[in-house]
Length: 233
Image (cartoon, rainbow, N blue to C red; front, top):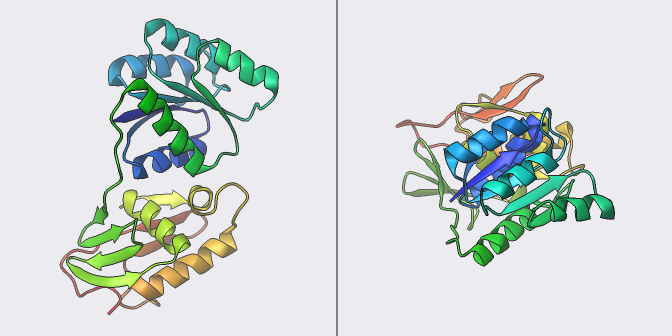
């Protein structure tokens, strides 16, 4: 099941993409209106998450165009929350409308509700695997190969998940904060402390981390362990 995410803000697009990928979706991202129409034709997604403030062809025009081409479910995700904005979005063909800042759980629930109505089979998230490390998101447990390693708090689990799903990349601190805490729910000091706690659970030597990488002034990344001594031991 694939979702096309159209948003001119790369941070928001990345957060939405991550939220949907952890719910079992494949995702494609576009930042411009005309490119979104072309991507829709190329990728044939099952669902579209559409911002209104787009360069070139705006979100309303994109919605009209996609609706003229097919019946793919469309959710508008926008900072514009006045009744007039919502009515206009629904009138041009959107199936649902969510105002930013948004709840990740609500977004996934609304996506699944639309897909149920469209008769599209739903998916469920599986374990997250990076190298020899396995994260069971549902149970909030980390395993090293087949061995139990650590139980995580909700925030630790969300942090490790976003890093593992983007293994080998440095994610900006703001992107991580938006996912772990939600809009206006955390800051960089809180993130630094959370990284430190997680390191104590999975790093062989938390003072000299191998797996949770820091790039000063930018953010954090995950380096997957392969065939080494067990993390956290």
